Length: 228
Image 1 (cartoon, rainbow, N blue to C red):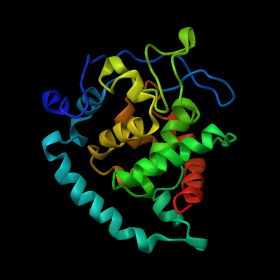
Image 2: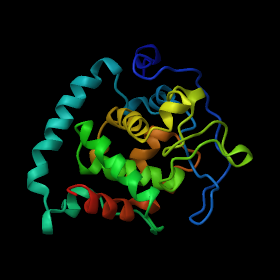
Image 3: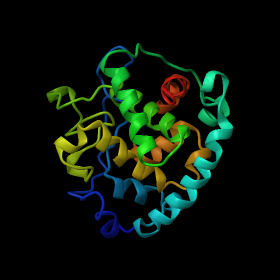
């Protein structure tokens, strides 16, 4: 991917490939995965799936229209999105769950709202919510000192030093979600990928399979929020 072009929408401060060594447990605050590399580095890591920023708007128009075209046909019972739209490939492996209330519930709503604003459908929201479940347990994290991985912040543990934005931007749920989705839209075929594969293309985590455990809960959260 052309990093010079990519910097037009997310300023690349530096590009690193430092792998993360900490782990985020279901009950604790140890980090697994994370946006180690900036968006430009993430795209370079998998060039066969990348597209240039110049073609991003064209790709978005094609992909988004197709996604929206299916929206009205994919409603399940009681107006909820159907399961095949939320999880087209089914879940991968054992699944984990946490309590999602208070701030976490508010952040799910913020992710869904930002996804709709970006013109994307339910599947994109599931991937974003599942990624945030892994990265921060849906908490908008600030700097955690020794428990933090470098300068990772926010719902998606994005790093200012890797070009994701300023600390203030990254800790804004709408901005951080939009930044994640911009990276996702550059992954060819993300709509049909297992969540863990799509998330890894954007996040470039040292633990690429860790996102899979959250797909079932992410789908339920989006189903209950999408039309609320």
